[in-house]
Amino acid sequence: MAARIINGNEVSQQMKDEMKDEVVGLKGKGVEPCLAVILVGDDPASKVYVSNKKKACEYIGIRSLETVLPADATTDQLLGVIDGYNKDKSVHGILCQLPLPKHIPETKILRSILPEKDVDCFHPYNVGLISIGEVRFLPCTPAGCLELIKRGGFTTSGADVVILGRSNIVGRPLSNMLDQRNMNATVMMCHTKTKNLKEKCLGADIIIAAMGQPEFLKGDMVKEGVVVIDVGINRVEAPGTERGWKLVGDVDFEAVKEKAAAITPVPGGVGPMTIAMLMKNTLTAAKEAHGLL
Ligand code: NDP
Image 1 (cartoon, rainbow, N blue to C red):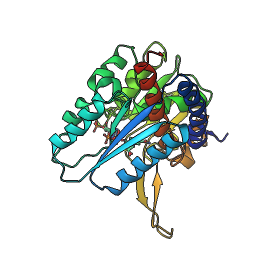
Image 2 (cartoon, rainbow, N blue to C red):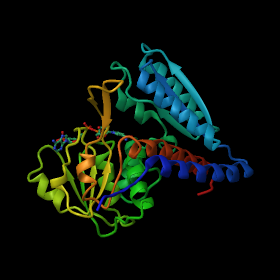
Image 3 (cartoon, rainbow, N blue to C red):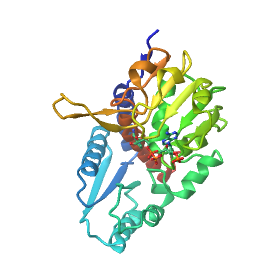
């Protein structure tokens, strides 16, 4: 039986429409959610991401501010911009688009954002809150994965979940979130030193692949009825196509969809959810700042 495709474009649109309504209510209470985005340099991909974030803000009714610094901006200049947004009470969320130019220390920058405005959820304080089950914000890509599982009609409660990858932006926070009491999954987080990976995947009810390895998860590595969330975004050569390349995930979509109960495509799966979750965190920050939580 072929899998149900969980469509990230549809789910994220649904969420954005729900948030649009919520913002009308917040504005009625005198609260105008505001996200400040900082871009350093002129990396084309980063520009696209920033522009998509601004478009999403506009759609939902979130005010958006943007500061663009040149690629040779100093760490102090960037810290100065963040300090300004930290002090500005009308700004609820601050996002510094990554990657930063090599001469700027990413960790120092991300930690300079006030935890209550850290809508990317990269600050160790907010990461720590997740670990002890006292969530303020949820990291955007992991939260997007969980929302797709939930809105796809599946539960994590009691499920054996295999996460492929242990990065600080995807695998590890996912693991932290999934074994909390509100999710109740039993989690196995795998990496390059994991033994018998295929057997582990075959035992999983849910697999979340976040490795950056094109089409790594094959059909013979999953059991019938598994739910598969594919976070990977890999550009591979596609001779004969107009661009000469295409995007694929970490899952061999065609093979795995024959066995899975549900699967997310790439593109159009987890990708669009990341921005929706960022918007959600911005609303959370605005509500918290105004004592509405
Ligand atoms: P990282 O490179 O930071 O981490 C990859 C992880 O996968 C590591 O833990 C690594 O193990 C593990 N891994 C790699 N190869 C193997 C293998 N053969 N067997 C087992 N484990 C393996 O990647 P990210 O987490 O940043 O990103 C992962 C993917 O998700 C990328 O394709 C990225 O583009 C995509 N992504 C998509 C987003 C979205 O919005 N949809 C957002 C963020 C990322 P080890 O630790 O041992 O090295």
